[in-house]
Amino acid sequence: MQAEEQLQKGVNAFMGFRFAEAAELLLPLAEAGEVEAQKLMARLYFAGNGVEKSLEHYEYWLTQAAEQGDRQSRAKLKRLKKRQ
Image (cartoon, rainbow, N blue to C red; front, top):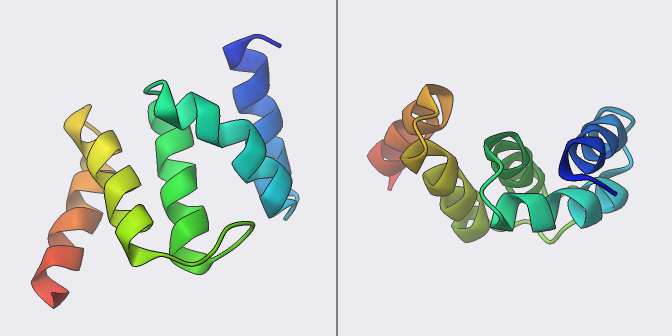
């Protein structure tokens, strides 16, 4: 499966509340640097949907996306750091 197709399947699984399937599809893409996958992995970890809830992993994936220039992730990280 090509990355673009895998991303779309992962997004569809996420939107369809099939979070474990979404995590399985999105994690390899997030690890490969796909920003949208990184943002969705952050959301999965924040809520504990399909993965064990982890603010550490949430922050990690937000940081990965922010470092690639994602402004929304940068803003979320800034708010998170203010709370810590």
